[in-house]
Amino acid sequence: MRQFFSEVKKNLGLGCMRLPNTDGNIDYTETCKMVDKFLAEGFNYFDTAHGYHSGKSEIAVMECLTKRHPRSSYILTDKLTGNYFEKEEDIRPLFESQLEACGVEYFDFYLMHAQNAALFEKFKRCRAYETAFELKKEGFIKHVGLSFHDKAAVLDQILTEYPEIEAVQIQFNYIDYDDNRVQSKLCYEVCVKHNKPVIVMEPVKGGTLASLIPEAQKIVDEMGDSAASYAIRFAASYDNVFMVLSGMSNMEQIEENISFMKDFVPLSAKERKGIDKIVEVLNSMTVIPCTACSYCVDDCPKRIAIPDLFRDMNNSSRYKNFSGDFYYGMHTKDRGKASECIKCGKCEKVCPQHLEVRKYLVDVANQFEKKE
Image (tube, rainbow, N blue to C red; front, side, top):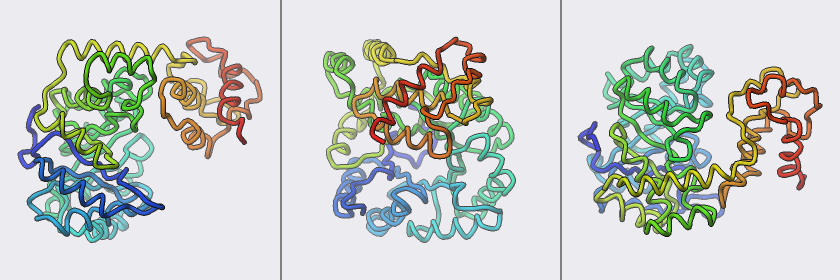
C-alpha cells in the first residue's frame, strides 16, 4: 500500500454508520470495547457523518472515542451533507456543531458528502468547497476530500474544477468493479489520473459479500478464508487505495477484520482467480440483463426508475441477505412503482439491449409488491 498520509497507521478504518444498536440507541458499552480494541491493535481511522444513526453517530464518536483517548491517537473524518444546508451561510454553523458533537477542535479529513452531478451543483452554488478550503487554512480541517456516488465523468469534472481536493472516497468492491451503474473501476482510474488517494466505502457491499449464496460460498470455502476477508483485501490491494472502511457492528467483526488486516498482504494471483469465479457465479444469477444505461428513464410517463428496480430484482437473486424490499421502497419513494407501468412501450423502443421491459416490470411488481 502507498502511504499517502503519514498519520494514518493502517489501511482499515472503522465506519461509524453501523454501530451496535439496541432498541434504536447506540450501545455505548459495546462501541467503547470495539473502539478500544481497534486502537490497541494499531488502527486509528474513524469515519462518521452528521446523518449516520439518525444524527447519533457523532455523539457516539465523542462518548466512545474522543472523550476517552488522546487526540493524537486517532484520525477522525466527518462530512458535509447536502441535506443540512441550503445556503453558504449555513455551512460554518453546521461545521461548528459537528466539531462540538464530536468533541474535537479539528477534523483530520472533512469530505464533501455523497457527491453526484446534482449535489455538486448545489455545493458549487453554496461555495461549499471554498468554505472547506477556508476552514482548512484556519486550522479546523487537515485534509479536504469528497465522497462520491455517480458516473466517472462527473468525478472527473469535480476533480478538474477543484484540484485542491486531497482524497476521494468511492464505492469499490469486486462485484461493482465492472458494473456500469457504479463504475468502481472507472472512478478509481479517474482518481489515479488526478493523483488522488482513494478511500474505499462498501468493500463488502453492505454485508452482502460477507454472506454469499451457497454456489459462491463454496468457492470461498475452497480458498480457505472468510468471504469478508477476500472482499476487503480485494479493495485494499489496489495501489492508490490508502484506506478501506468497514462498518463494523460488533466485536466479532472487529476481531475478524483485524486478523487479516493487521499485517496486510495483497491478494495473490490464485486468490484473484477465485474472486473472478465468485463474480461469474453472482453474475450468472442475473435475471434481468440490464446494463443500466438509463435511456428508458427519460421518457417514462410514470417516472419509474427502471434500471434501479431491475437492479433490486437481480440483487435479490444474487445475494443471500440482500434487503430487496428496503431498496425497492427507496427507489419508488418519489418515483413510480413497477405496477404503475401503463405499457406504453417507450422504454422498449430506446433499450439498446432490446429487453422486454414491460414484462420484466410485471415480474418486479410480483416480487416486491406482493406483500402490499
